[in-house]
Amino acid sequence: GQQVMQIPQYQHVQEGEDFTTYCNSSTTLSNIQWYKQRPGGHPVFLIQLVKSGEVKKQKRLTFQFGEAKKNSSLHITATQTTDVGTYFCAGTKGSSNTGKLIFGQGTTLQVKP
Amino acid sequence: NAGVTQTPKFQVLKTGQSMTLQCAQDMNHEYMSWYRQDPGMGLRLIHYSVGAGITDQGEVPNGYNVSRSTTEDFPLRLLSAAPSQTSVYFCASSAQGSLHFGNGTRLTVT
Image (cartoon, rainbow over all chains, first blue to last red; front, top):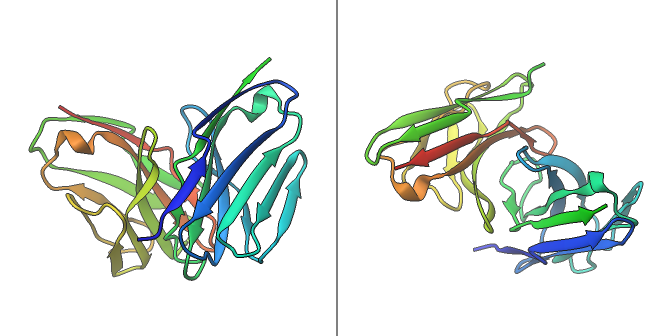
């Protein structure tokens, strides 16, 4: 079956340092989404990437979708304590409107002030 | 709009008991799904629905049933609870691909 792998599982950084999490799929994805889950909360949608090689930015966050549409990354520049949480990638092979997203295991980010 | 509402927030069951986790959304989304979240395993899809009257299995459907009689509601039934079903359960809905999650139900099976 389709698998989405995410690394690293945990990352501890000093406030101000950069952070990157990587997502790899065993199969080609039609799109990839990224979610953030704060401790004790529920996942919240951040962004969706659809095109091969696509790059999108949201303030200090940069998202990339690989040329082969099998991998993606999320990079945070100059982390802040508000960035603490678990970041999940999620992909789908079919239509993006089915809600049938397969999630990676997540990367939990801790930021030391 | 309340978004996606899940009840209860917490539940403790004994092995063999049955129960239903409720999920309702008021956004008129066609698509709804149930995930379970376990440490180190991310979110795993249990069942999903693309519209009223239509359901399908996800990655880990065993031990769970769903039905979708209305657009708004998508209950998840545990037929005979087992300790392996101890988890946090999230219901989600979507219209344009991105998922809107409920606040979750923390279930413990002893």
